[in-house]
Length: 357
Ligand code: PHE
Image (cartoon, rainbow, N blue to C red; front, side):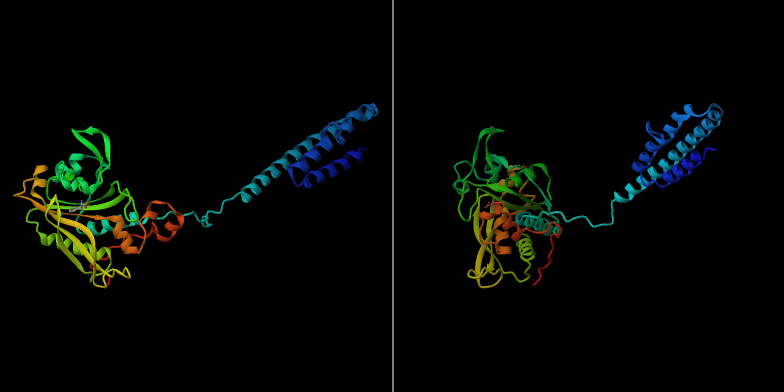
């Protein structure tokens, strides 16, 4: 009696247990309990059985349906868990793998030189000061003892901007010296600053760019002499060019804002470009003792305080230090040039104290 039910039970349970994924399990479910499923069909055929068999067979079939439903459910839970576990394994991120290399940027030689200047002067106790690119005529010229119609103004090829600021025409600063004025106006002496920054002159050829960079220096204290100026600049130049024996020469010159004024030359070989050898001289910066008028213009008493100032072209010393022959590519953003001359941002600006020769 009901052999077919017993057979169906064992084959169905075996089929459910053998379903290897959720899809196969669902197919098994449909083949048993779906509209045209085996068990569904047997339940429908129940009406045709003899009445005395009807009750017992019905109970067996219902019992089988409950057991199969339960078996399907528990198999489904197992397969779902297995599916999630498989996904977790296949989607796991291996955080121990090194990241793919990223394209690294580099430091423009100008930035590199400014970093080196800040490192060398920083070790001597200088702080970095900054000022605006758009200056007043007063800060850029008058306060620096260059009154209107002074011939020194002609050397500067000034870009004038429309408008007046504080009663004074606006200019693109032609040198970093106006930041001397701004510093002395806002800071009580003693003062020790360098001023790296952009400067502008209406001049454009192979060795001049309308935008270039300077680094200014200003020291104001009591009892500052020309000897301090010389010692400071000789130390700086020997550290910057990493050459303890670098010859340095001071030559009398003229700037309206310093008195006395000196141009500073370093020894090099004109033919080979080698720095420090060869018996030729190359002008590299302007300097002098701050003019008493400039101190007075900023409210500092020249009988009590004095000091020195200097200014140099950043492109020029960069070209010399690294043997870069042409000024123009500095501003071209040509990646081939940058790959050749730029610096790793991870390379710290070295302080060659006392020079490395
Ligand atoms: N400002 C001068 C220039 O641009 C350089 C300089 C600065 C000279 C400070 C003396 C003192 O040429």
